Image (cartoon, rainbow, N blue to C red; front, side):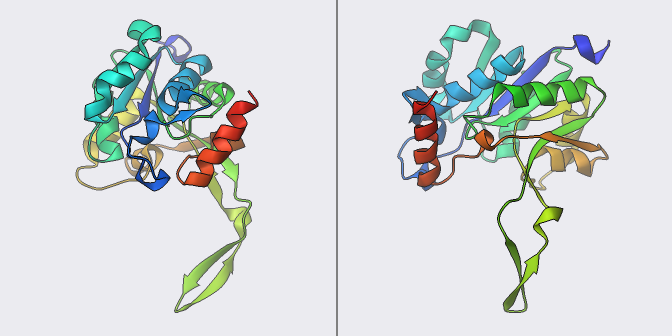
Length: 225
């Protein structure tokens, strides 16, 4: 089958806590502009070209998330996520069905524009095995060395965003092979089993909501929609 006709399943990792944001509810349940983060993340995936979405949610919030996403019908499945991010992805891979392309997206990047999703999908359809959106490193960098610091050439570094895209065969093979080794993202995991990683331009709106100030910025952006 040509990749141009293969369906796309997006996994939205939404099982994280809201501790660093100072909240007592999961991060993906926090509202931005009156809309829960998880709903915004799913909306972005579907608007960008995903045929269906699997949401890995905190176990106690599966029903609530499913209610929020009920308007999408059977295009969205909500499951209980795992302890680690990669555990959640591995569990969600069991629900991608016959999709030939899999996207993995952090719900915390709730404002990621749909056009980035489309870029990632098109790169996979064009023959890539693993695709990551990236943006230039704009801050000056220094590296610690023997109790002091030395400058680092920032032009040699890129910041990685999501959604990351993969052929289903590659990402499943990677998750089967990693064992107990922890990875910060799926592209690095796929690279470890021999997949070549391709980059596409990301966007500033795909920033990760991690600290309270990120939430303030996201709220300001949402008001201007």
